[in-house]
Length: 104
Image (tube, rainbow, N blue to C red; front, side, top):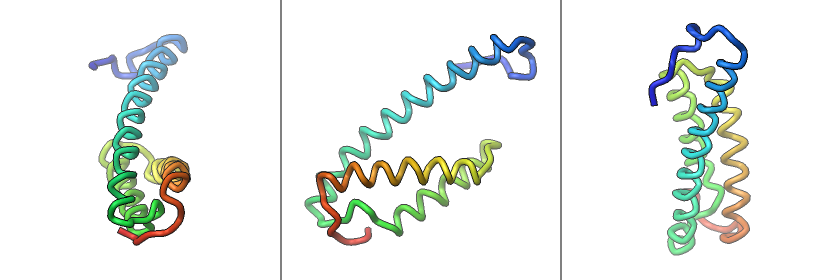
């Protein structure tokens, strides 16, 4: 979706409307991401891969930083956000997989 550049908006209401629209899109993408993560669980279970795979988590955090820089977003904030999300998703996976398995 194309939206006006925030610098062209002159009221708080316009800016908040833009922020809310972006938040809606972000939630849709996070829902899609969660569906992918949920489909990983049975594959990990068959391959005996741990829910918490530190090497993969490190890769995800590095990717978040790289993508943030590419899009003009603070990489420290991106990494912090991704750490919260990944830790919550690992806990979700561990309810099904337990804590055993390989780091892949």
